[in-house]
Length: 475
Ligand SMILES: Cc1cc2nc3c(=O)[nH]c(=O)nc-3n(C[C@H](O)[C@H](O)[C@H](O)COP(=O)(O)OP(=O)(O)OC[C@H]3O[C@@H](n4cnc5c(N)ncnc54)[C@H](O)[C@@H]3O)c2cc1C
Image (cartoon, rainbow, N blue to C red; front, side, top):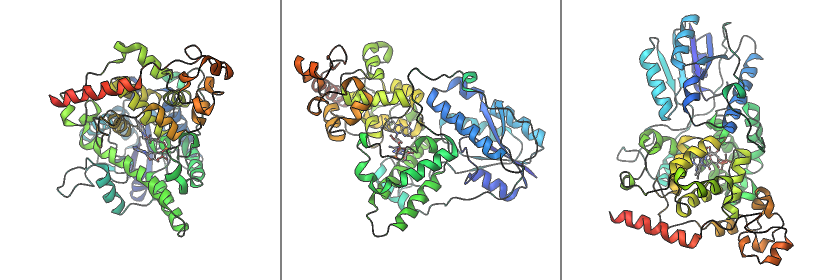
């Protein structure tokens, strides 16, 4: 009795639900990965994410090869065709895999389930709660996070599980294509800050344990860099959602006399993650159009990037003249990551100040984020654009200057990512354009030359955006 376990984004052996289940029922199990040609030709991918994925996959392959009679079998092609081939080669009698919730995965998996003529068993693995597991009292999916969260916390949660003994038969495997073969190269001046794979994920968990008790106090201060940075590890499943949740629970139990609100606040982020996954599953239209019904056929007339090249370029390059916004965009360009506070600030700015189409923002982030996850990204962007679930009302407009003053009071984050402002004194760091000539000379920066003047007047753009939303609401 041989089972194929089709591995997609749970790039680990431990607590990999499909693998655990298969190992309990079969002596022979083939963990199988298909480098999906179709996905690589159609998806909006970028160097940071593909590099993280590739290193995690090769790490997993090595980790399996180190164990007796185990291996990860890798092929390249179209998933359905490659699955058909390996099922025939191994004379397998069952296919196992973990469920995924993105539109692409749903279509792919439906096709596989429909067309293959062996039993297919699928499992929840990526999230704590999926699909319609948490519903309102009237049995509808939640559209408001705070209510969803209450039920999420109350529900019993699965614990991590370990695989039983199994062996992998000798079967031909291919090497994982290189980044060059896949068509990706490091952008100029890129700084690789990640240690992908299982060990990197475990190391991150250990490091974050030192910070987690203060998470609620520190998380919004970009310069403290105190969040877990576990998002790419969760994205590619080199650590599991159950492992990180229960590790946090253990810490609570170990610190019974301490204030553990930091740990709970962090677990709330894991609930946000599940929440957006269930939104994506239950309202898949939100990938292409506003989640909010009233804007669906009545969307603001955003500027597409082709029509607004100058402001688009300024935003992408981190040259808007608003230092906090620019620091966020430059952190992203340089490392593939952006702090959550900045993700909110830069998308509020791209919306209310620049009126850029959220779809272009989404495409750009998809290529740039090491942790690009369609559910959280659509959720976060549409929230900022006041068209999504739990959306902030359109009249509550982030001020790019005061956001910086509040969350980076001394400008440490700005100085790190916008080095031309490194010698600007604290009192001017958030509004360098207000310095006179002499002050500019003193800190070695000429505004308008070394660093841009603000490309828009925030006060005016704020009023304009509110008016445009108000007019739409009248229709
Ligand atoms: C415009 C915008 C776009 C975003 N795009 C993504 C994305 O593509 N991928 C992504 O993983 N997150 C995204 N987020 C959510 C959040 O910014 C990141 O998850 C977080 O910054 C990752 O850093 P961390 O691992 O240190 O998070 P922590 O603060 O340590 O949080 C722990 C984990 O909880 C999850 N999480 C945290 N916040 C959120 C959230 N708001 N929504 C869903 N899950 C969350 C992540 O898996 C994260 O790793 C986006 C937010 C905004 C505002």
